[in-house]
Length: 257
Ligand SMILES: [Fe+2]
Image (cartoon, rainbow, N blue to C red; front, side, top):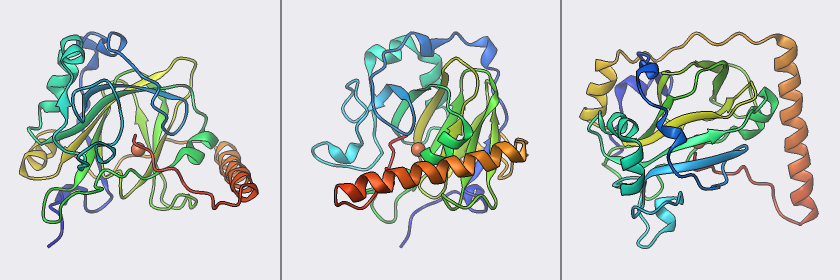
């Protein structure tokens, strides 16, 4: 039967929407409660919707009964502190699974490449229903930072680097594309991440905000790129050696972010 997917995401696995005027909203991400959920890179997360409305970030499939990343329960205390973020997550009218703000500490390009991962949003997702994709709304004005998307984790061919100023809005099939953020500067980056179920509601939302399946890739000097490739290879080798010493095969971490 197959999953219901967005035609807009078919070509590249992502769309960039019109930017949002972030400047008119309060900085709600500074008011909500975070926990130290481990993801790719140095992160904390503040959930707005979780499996049962608790302030925790575990995949819905790790709860009882296990389920896919749909039907998230809004967390009253967080919703009260972040009404604008909740409004934006709900605007498409698509089913929301997990919804949370990520706080990411500065992450150079090489670390970002090492952090590249695919999400597991569709674990336990019933065939014939909507495929879960994710919205990324950049909250802080990270002008020099960018999201890295690849088809292949260790092959830079076709890499796309999407700029992350305040108000940048992306929707990404994060189970299809390898992804992570390069975050430069000294302050943490904050981004609202929402799991949405594909379907006519999400399609209409993408159309309303003129989603395009291409972005001008942020320019990065070749020397920085080359250094990043070497860093990724060095860290991958170090991880493989670590697991080899323990008699295990190195695994690429499946992140929840
Ligand atoms: Fe992710």
